[in-house]
Amino acid sequence: GNIYCALVGEKQNMLRCEIRSMLNPLPPQPYRGYCQFDWGAGLLLPRQGKPEILCISDTIGGSNYTLNYGKTWENAGFKCLSQKAGLKCTNSSGRGFFLSREKWLIF
Image (cartoon, rainbow, N blue to C red; front, side, top):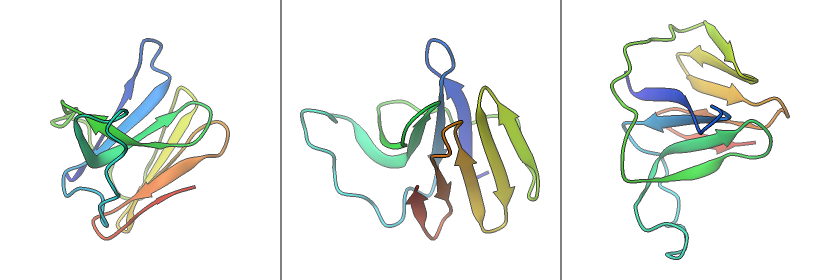
């Protein structure tokens, strides 16, 4: 119940994942011209290319769907694997991220 994800965008071509406990460690604030809202609550992964730190004024939290540990979700070119250690998601170009309470990583 700490991580929420949803397909977003006009063509559902991005995967937005939020982590209630925030990114740890908290990244530096993006430059003000780009981000005038809250940052550090999660990541946005496009279908192609690298993930970005979310800059948001809303939330997708509260989803009723749970991806149990050891299970994989695949849709629209995205793939996520849920494990006790955390959540790993990738896009069709092999880029992605790992999220957990203890750390986060973009690759």
